[in-house]
Image (cartoon, rainbow, N blue to C red; front, side, top):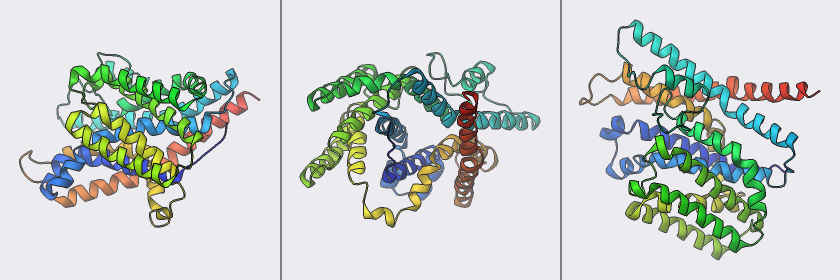
Length: 351
């Protein structure tokens, strides 16, 4: 195993996390945005697909040479669960507290979203593994549940990808994964943001696999020439256009993986000197993603008086600041310490 930390990909993750935040607040931002910017944030759900491919890319980049012994796989599983689970559970119980406050104030709650059955599935991070589950409790956690499944199968993806020695064979498997993804979404007009309850797992695992194959290609060709980079960026632009015209499940995976490859190939970009703060935003992006919907729900309870009246922008600004501040606190005092404690405890247990 070797470690590669490409800062520009971390920065992209931060931008993607805030794209999701703006997407969920889009109805309240509408009065303050121009049509083009509003159109852009209304596509923020596609950032989740970027997350999936990024995860596959980064993991294969760092584990492609690992010998998959029982010990290594066990360590890998513990590290991945330690990475996502503590903060997920913290936010889940934050919702329990919020629901308690709402009930004390004699307000009603959506019984289907906050049912005990859904709580059990969320606690186990299995809510996206069963077809009858709905978006519930901390809504964005559906993608964390789906990504947990991708983490579990990753040790089997590594040897499969590594056996694809030629570029042609990698491209063939890439195409097969993309085909399987679109067979699933064909009945939904190739809209990758639909049918989360039934196709969320496919959406994640397929694109996670695409990201892993892209990483294998990058490891073979880490420094494409200038012409190759231009062609790659043209492919990204053409894929974004195709996604708007013909279907997001058909073209956005191509766009995202092309963007990831191009960004990784320009990892020494001097622009990071000017936008280095985005790397920090990327480092806390999981905390941002997992906590923002809680603040969205609180915002609706406290700041929104009418669905037809414009919500003052100051309320939105305060909420966004609260999300950022909470992201920093959760990352520094829960996410990172909990991960270290679990991994360190596992090492001590092995002696």
